[in-house]
Image (tube, rainbow, N blue to C red; front, side):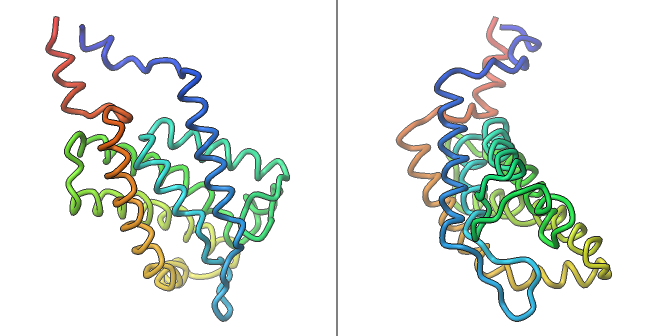
Length: 204
């Protein structure tokens, strides 16, 4: 196998499409309990970021990104899939939380990309770091600036407001890693590991 052919992304199979649809549905289902607003917090705390982390950590960068993209597209089209039964383009444009659905796209991709580099072993502490960088840091980096823009806040103030999300998000990171470890043990090869791909490149 040549390096060029190993890097060429394969087309999505029926199984891939089913996995993408299932995780988009999971993200939607995690919004059913609604969001929690603390005090005057403009952006609600939701369980849906857990689904985003799981999509990246279990499906990988490509399929995880597509699962979130499918969810975002349906919510933007008006389906009440965001926490609290919200839906429509306003939640992706002028809402204080408008940046977070875009941040979820980056978060799933980063989580999946980093997870692939930990497989097949998927050690616990590095997996926590990878999931935190993708599911928390990457999401905040997109979501907080949009909050600042839409509310007319200083950027530092929007990032400071993210502190209230951290305890819950850290719990979601741990849950994601524990679940993903079991899934990858039961279904090895669900995400192609980088080491395995590099070995394939060297195979004639």
